[in-house]
Length: 328
Image (cartoon, rainbow, N blue to C red; front, side, top):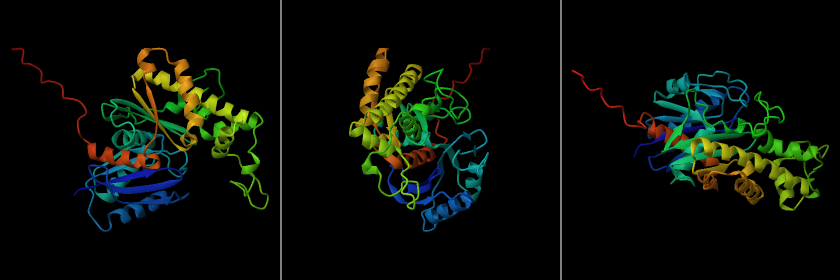
């Protein structure tokens, strides 16, 4: 039995696994992402994975971005010590193995297409709705990465040209409306405070003050209980997501959308208004037929996608062009 080494790198955790051709995991491990010496922590995790054999045949990495596949560098927003960090080459040097790299949301999409809810789709958009919003496209079984590896950046599609400025430098990006922190921000600005059920020990605050820091899970609980501002926040975010999905479907003709990330854990609180907004905004017949599903793999999706990336590295995704005929 042969295996690849799959690695998932984010601002919160480092994860790795040995994965066979069918997606079965031999062993895996997860570590918190340190503030400094991130590569040292990653090297220790890799050593743990390969210490007892078998030796993997390739490495696939999904990493938070931005990234530049042309040179194999990454600059994750939440890993401040990595700016234009040569991740692909460093891992290749460390392991001596062929190493491939993609964005973590692209790996999420590829993993869901391989082992999750998008398995039968020929044209799929995967969306991670969490602290930010990331995405990835899988077309005819292959990830669409783009020249520098940043294709699928759907979180920064503009859904309101006159909307609020976004951290990316644009305006009215879907992330500004539908990411977890922005759902909470808008609800708080419009008078929402967590219900008394959430006012126990501090969440992100200090026990000395008993301060409660509102988060997306609290907002979802209050929306489920019918709090009007919490319900409106999810409705507003869902409509922004629907506008982005409709635009992406019109441009790429995706047939399936799979949504994961922490905000997706709100379940019907997010998905019900999302489907209603899709019904309202989708015009063309092929856009109306888009199926929206919740992630089956959850936090395992990006690791599965990194493994699939390693297994398919170097395999052509289209037939080579025919040889030119000799005109003589």
